Image (tube, rainbow, N blue to C red; front, side):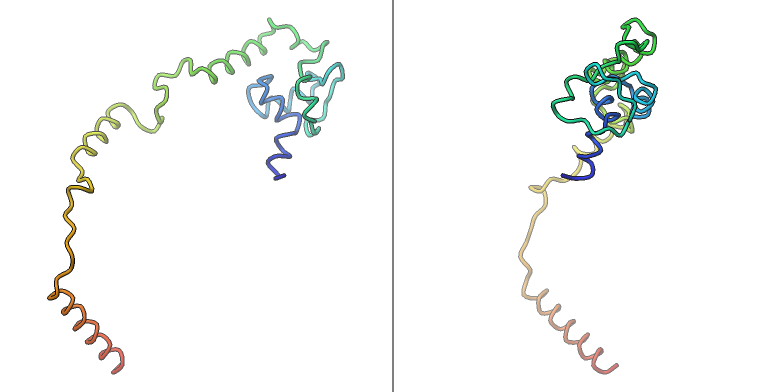
Length: 147
């Protein structure tokens, strides 16, 4: 078990992962302010390690104002979660935000013009070029020993 595995079992991380909060910071705040419960028990310790069997019982605490599905913060959390899951409101869904459409078109054109592996001719070295290489290495060896 790694450190990341343990951190992912903390109540604040599970609260975020279940979609009860829109960020880890907000999840920590909701737990600390008593808005999150495991079963019927309010838990206010963000670092509480959640057992696997407890995970399905995590919800908003029954007397919390967030237990009302019409609460403005809860609607905001649900909208953020829905847009993150389904990509709503994203103009360039599936594209890297660092590139726009003209950049992508230019990259595709450049790729068409680039040589492929079949365009490059590979030839075996000639005997002349290997002799030159041997002579050069001998000359370099002589120079090195003299110095």
